[in-house]
Image (cartoon, rainbow, N blue to C red; front, side):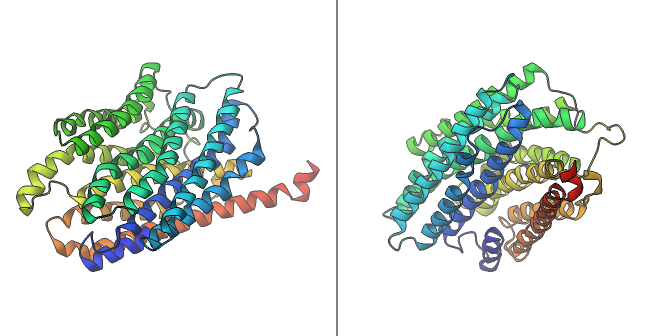
Length: 418
């Protein structure tokens, strides 16, 4: 909702600078740590032990991460909104420390749990890597908050945001979310749908290639911004190529779009297939970005700064909503009924959610890039956020129905007799 309101205000103001950037930072953090982070943690606590054939270690300690992370996210959002009014800085840093404690507990519990497994799954490397990126992001969080919100001058703020915001978001979106999704997919897609298991060579490429591309992208971008040596930015294109190869090759390895036997498909599969298509779109936008900035954006606008907030924001949205969120919706649509003891064939098809998410995301990306050349497009951009919000509301309502039905089923007299 916060993102939709932000986008509406941007549309009304006909500028991406028409809202306080602290609101953008707060929305982004709530989206990544709140939505994506909590989903990864909850899914990991519930599903990873089942995958590994073990029991979750220290479940009470694991559950303590929920209030810690929620409190930290809410307090940091408040600190963003308060800035620069005191005590925003100590409040933001304290909130970051709460989140660090929550993430550290999560990582410790999951490592202990997976290390006790009788056999090691080939997805374990991805899980450990994503846990590592999650811990890095949590350590960096209070530092990033201070760099952005405590900048002494507008020039210092602009330098800090332009130099460190993109690498920080890459850690969160690519390091945590994408790496975890790729690892979980290696288990779920072959086991739940009967898709082909990717080759060992491809699994190694995904593990080392994607994580290496994230690390190299962070180093090269930060070095280019802080030293002024533009060759670092040129070298950054290597990571873009690796991401694109991973995005195109992974569904091919799974044979994701081949017909399935009767009864193998269900409501979740359309989201998973669409997610991988959006992954390709996102990485194409990323790879095409430098040419767009220098070959299209600068010549057509006559500006001096070769960076389009609209274009890069469109790439981010293709990745976060198109790939990450679509996968979250798809995987949850598959596993929640199963965990609740409900026949998935008797649940809602979620077609309306699927249509609204894809329409809203496409609307957002196309209209956002169009604003670079036609300011009139700002009149339409604000609607896309509420289309996506409606989709997420319907999805959330369906999940709650499934969970509540599972609770009733568990406590029914027939089930207790069994």
